[in-house]
Length: 239
Length: 204
Image (cartoon, rainbow over all chains, first blue to last red; front, side, top):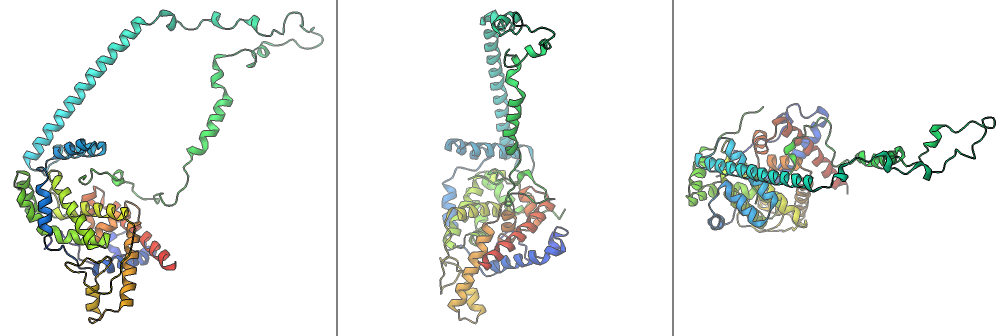
């Protein structure tokens, strides 16, 4: 006899109280009846010796512990398994309902890992700070001097509209300072941030910014999207 | 919120003993749950041999992770979720093939594929199974299985746990760490999509 609490009743839309609009009731009920028909027509059970086979497989396993899953995942090189085991360990350590010994060992492991990670982080940060400090000492001072106006190309190198070819005031207006600041003539530090480039970047970025509508993967409005919906191997024990 | 799932003190005692080193006591849980786990896996896979393999994997997985079982609900509900995940993953790995057998029972020891309750059907038909009916039924069963397997997550998980594993919505909510309202919405949408998929299959 199974120990699982069985939901013996047939499905009824009232089970979903309020989640099913009246218009959908027929559709939902028809689907439920189809699955119930499938379920009602099978009456299978394990063959002889199933329990023995399971127990033989179980006794070949190490004694279960929250740490065991992480160790075996690490041995397999499964990063996901290790992360899932860590999540399980954390849950076992901080939530009740488990035997004290199991919880205590999980808490000890969690504490050890946290101390180890914090310690390694502190050592790493110290080493990084040391490297940066040494880099500052050895760097030539000229490298940190900001570029002076003298380092710019001299105006003489630029085509000058001024001296001999200066048109008379009567023939046409003299070139204004704004004309000499033509981007094509004098490179400016802000050339890289040319608005046209930015516009181009925006133009290329725009189509990808819009999500492509996909009917199959879009959640329907009003649905509560739970973060736990993704497949987390750690939700249930990972194999 | 619905009522919280009932506790399972027997399984909790056994789990504590197993975690303390008395591994043989795990047999109590295997004996108690094996039938429902195999049946759940069979409903997903449609093949008893595969179902037993999946059920065995589920028990071993549950044993490895016994320390993480919270013990605040039925052990069987926790195990059912493990089993359905394993079965669904196995079903997704293999190519769907419907084998139709004209004789045999789907009861203990049967090894047919998609022999959905042929013994039951034969009994319902007065002991004379009509091969044509059996073929139609097996085809229909395979179509339903395929439609359920083709549902997207999280709808598939909720439908499988509710109908194949026969868990209550409260148990599903507890096992999946989701609000009951979300589980209801997922079941509603899952069933609606299932109906449309089956209708599309029929019209083909």
